[in-house]
Image (spheres, rainbow, N blue to C red):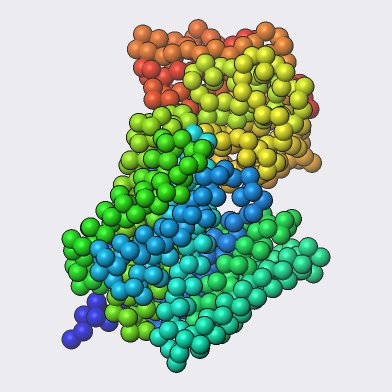
Length: 605
């Protein structure tokens, strides 16, 4: 009699399980402040080879391979859409060297490690080595935010990951095309012709589709509500048609399509960016769960000391040599070279693409293809766990930490904003006051507060300000509409829980009330720009009070009944801004930041 494990689970239940595990792993990783890929790896292995609940090849059958292929195509399209040449022009020399020299050198060194240490043949080594160029932007971003690096080393790691993400995929595609043509063509002439035809068709279709989409979107030939669906359908069509000409050339086509759209300067790019971000979260988690669960116990048990030696060689030899050679004779300081050299976590794209190519290599009769996915999992798991625990201590050792505490951006250079920034600065918190009006920043400059002259929403702000240093933002200009725009636009990046805004003057009127999806959280007593600055003009000031066992929160309230608590700071520097309904934390070592002075009567709007 067949057991439940032998029969498998219903495909619908399988889809639900993959979705729940993938998104649930992402959420759990966010709550635990650890790399999501580690949690997804554990979840996939648990329900797959460990418990045998999910076997994608068994439960999904023939749908397994096309599902993974389409998901990888969308992931690579997202990678192409991150490659904006305008931003790359202003990048440091080190970024160009890591891309132009580091990518091919990393390909060669990784292929050599695969061949000579892991024991793979040159066909599998060439394909997998190309994929290993990718250092994982989805993994680098949270690591950088946690480590709080200085601007240049952070940019080196960030841009290397963004640029090399599609570059690594392209290298793998080209290497695989060489392998597949050499396996099927009758001679060198046919091989060259087939490769040239596949690359030409894929490149032409990708660029043509990107141009057509950009043209149709710019000329309003597609209504706004249909832009994302049209983009998705064109993406799938280009991938399928190009893949029909030459296997896997569809990945090249969709990557180039994404690159073209990223540089088309489309007004609707925000909507498309949201689509690709949401799709990537779902697909990355789903693909990772599928590939982890699809591994067999036999393959996992086959990983031996050669796997460990391969991982060590890549992390401690291939990566450092690649980076140090690429940055040789450059103006990048040695401390930054060493940090970048020993920081190269691999991410979800590596596993997803490696799993796909591993299966395709096996289908071609290359036995080593079965080892690609297990080696990818081993490398990703080891590198993410290692760098997740070592990046911040290594940066501190090399003196490359921007700050140990997350900072605050205050938009608006009023008297209230300047006083708040000065108080936060006295608590050793990074703070900057930004305003598009240079005259509004005079008070902040005189107080010694760091300032940014310009629009916080402009592209130059992202280039000039090291946003990794900042965790919270307060919109506090005299323009309520602009405050709402800033809070709404930056909420997805900073997190809605970290975006604050002074109360709008007319927010109590039903004619002017806004939905909850617009604007930021209330801060302090939820007063308007004019009310808080009137209080400052009337003699109010910000004061910092340290609580203790002898002077508790209740004692503070009795001593300062008119005080308005703005924030509390924990002993380890955890900053928490307070709203009108939030109670300050009480305890030894807690510091309260409050406005002291009589509060004027609030006028009706």
